[in-house]
Length: 125
Image 1 (cartoon, rainbow, N blue to C red):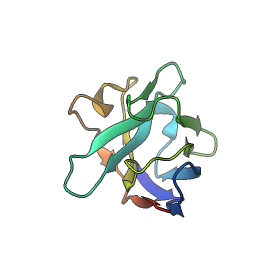
Image 2: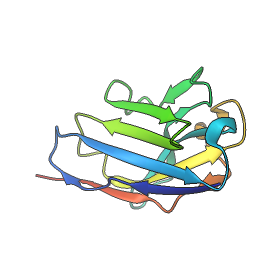
Image 3: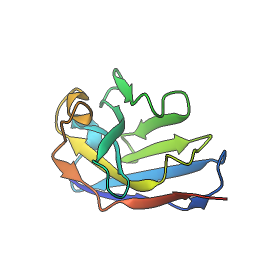
């Protein structure tokens, strides 16, 4: 499975941005998929995850209520809609996936096995 992110950009505080991740090479149906981010000097942190049947959706506390994840298995695409962006949100955002039916590897210091190259989000006025 290969993952390619897009949508990173410069946005003002309070603004919105939509990140897209397109998967290829394998059916997305069997993967939990989501997003991590890494700011300079900080550890990579899990932001959001969604399982293949949408039965589990995870958000980190720092983005809950502001970010929304969705997936379309037929289009092999995952979207992260980011609203009310804050000055603490800038980072490289990575799409990641795991061939498991849960999101356990997207938080608590665990990491999935498949990664995209990342897309840069900047928040500045």
